[in-house]
Length: 166
Image (spheres, one colour):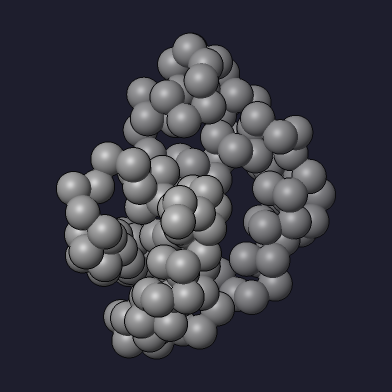
C-alpha cells in the first residue's frame, strides 16, 4: 500500500495534532480566535518543512515549538504596542492633551485603511509589526528607499486626513 499524497499526510497530521495545537495556543493566549489563527499558521509553517523532518514523530515537536514561538511573538508585539500607547499617553498628558480615545483610534484605523496598498503595508509593518526599513523592504520585496518614501507619503496623507477629522 502506498503513502497518501502530501495533502493526505497533512490531513492525517492535522487530525492527529490539530486539537492539541489549538489547545496549546489557547492556553498561551487566552483568546479563541487568535489561537485558531496561531494553530493554523503553525501548521502551514511546519507543513512547508514536512519533507525535511527527520521522522514523523518530530512533526509533533516542531508543531508545538512553532505554536509557542508564534504565541510569544504575538504577545511580544502586543506588549510593544501597549508600551508605545502608554508612552504616547504620558507624552500627551505632559503636553496637556487628553488620552487617545476610542474615536481617535478608530479614525487612525480608518485613515490607514484608505491608504494605497503599499503605503498601508509599510505603515502597518512599521508601527504595528515594529519592523525596520530593511525588514519591511525584505517583506515587500522592494528597495529600502521605496519603503522610506512610501512611509513619508503615507505619514503626510495620514496627517492631512486626521486634521480634517478634527
